[in-house]
Amino acid sequence: MRVLIVGEVPFVDTLAGLCRARDHKVDLFLSDDLQDQDVLDRMVRAATRCQIAIESLNESQAAKLWLVEGIEVNLPPDVPLLVSALAASATEIASWTDHPARVVGYGLLPPITVTGMVEFVPALQTDFEIAARARRFWEDLGFEVVRVPDSAGLVRPRIVCSLINEAVRVMTATGLAVEELDQAIQLGMNAPRGPLTWADEIGLDVVLGTLEGLLRYWGHERYRPAPLLRQKVYAGQLGKKTGHGFYKYETVLA
Image (cartoon, rainbow, N blue to C red; front, side, top):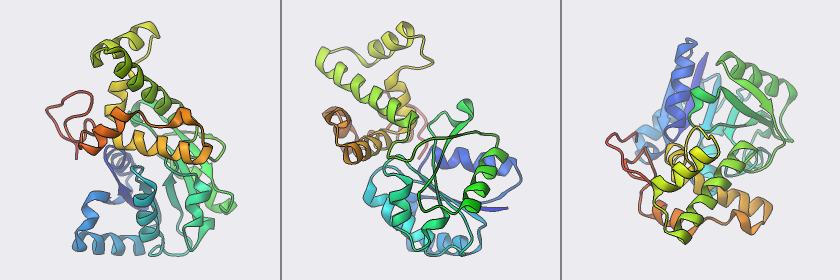
């Protein structure tokens, strides 16, 4: 199977590796590189010959809209488009396209290979056979597929990003060091990692985009992003992928 994957690290790199391990032919493009016309043209050509397309961009609704429209308009009519439903619901994303019946939402959070679970979210417009093909695709990659109700942020991302947001607020209000807050949660709740470490793994821009999607979708003030989180995104301190988030890293993923 030929798979087109477009979006941001670390999501797309991991997905590409899983697809290649199943002997799929992968065309991989980073969303940041699509500003280059030559790269954009190559992505368009790849879209015209793929058998399944995966989009993973959650930094903002505007960026996601541009990317989804750019991919979908170039796909053959019967090709499923799997979209990350963090910053917007699958049904809303499907409404941006010319062929909404082929759009199927999903939800993943790093570390992807450790959790082994994908949230599966057909849109209201999704064709039954397309949804079945999408589900088989995720299962073939080795994921446990869990169907969840369609909404911005889904289930696990909604909970995790809310926890991260509250952790940032607490740290700002109390003056706790990043390491101290992470240790308090990790040891006190027997968690596998602290919320700020997890934020850096996900990408602070993805956390921010998810929270903004939740705030827009549900309208609850509890989803309003903490000012420090927004400031770090403005500063380009996005976590592991840029080498600096709440922690500093020697290796840059982007």
